[in-house]
Image (cartoon, rainbow, N blue to C red; front, side, top):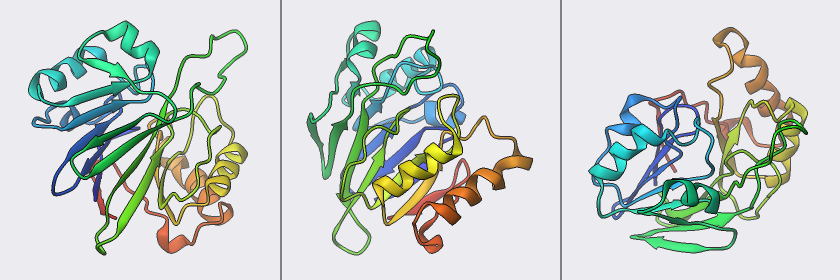
Length: 219
């Protein structure tokens, strides 16, 4: 499975049989909204850094045959062709299996309502002929599924401390990880966040994949 970072929380996942886009939000590269012939688009929750409604409409129009999955609240807001993705729901797209994980966004402030958030486990063929499982949690550290090969780790957020980030990484205990949700980190400060995850998260540094927007990893 080839994984391409398209900025902030957006990932493009590709195999020989399927192309899946996750979380095309407002901080994504323009390339995220220029894709066509996708087989699925998955949105973890309604916040604009994970779903840019106006620009996502271009993605919908360019991939009329795709499956469009989102948390139930986003589906209610956006309507068709989006359909509800919920905890435990499994959707097969070519040789990729998409499984919903979790239900709620992390708390930002007590005065801000908590919205729905459904992460996604993505299982597909690996480069060594087996299978690989990637977990994109959206905006939540609550769920720590087992058997994760590669974690898309939210590196910084208004709802998280670095200690929470490291504890989540340790709890999932993936074989490797890559950063997401990092558009709010200044370049000069990036090493502070990244090095804490690498040095204290319990994952071999060899498998800490510091992908910048536009970078690709074959897993």
